[in-house]
Image (cartoon, rainbow, N blue to C red):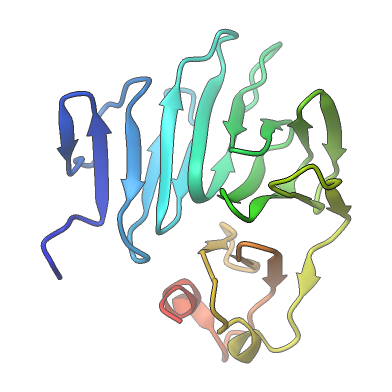
Length: 212
């Protein structure tokens, strides 16, 4: 290690390593400074945003009482608590805005490659310029960095041999469902999911694949 912390908090006063349970304010930026870095942002209403390795995200003020996170680069997985009359969470990337409808979704963004959205449980709304796309539960959307049309699919590609196929260059993050039954892997261009067999990946799936 070169002494750089895995997670860095950037404020107008400078950069520092945040502590567990530290309160954050709008316009502060959290950066996971390595592929092994990870951070979980927990809001007062119970909504959580998990930042994957090599990710930069900034908290922003929200005019409607919900939460707003700008995903500058990298990947995140959100678990959202519903709030009456309010969009509980909006994730803004360089290419689109993702508005929570259902309780769980993931977003990855790379400036030169575009944004990918995965509606894990329940749907999400993807806004690009003035166009709104309703993404159903289980669906994915790819928003390219140029004027090309958005690509929406009902289900992500399923790996038949994840222990072999998931080890490719470009893996940006891993999300494991709460029950451990489903694993999702994000790359700049696609999202893939699988249900790991206990004798293949087991509890070490995230660590194994992130290090690949």
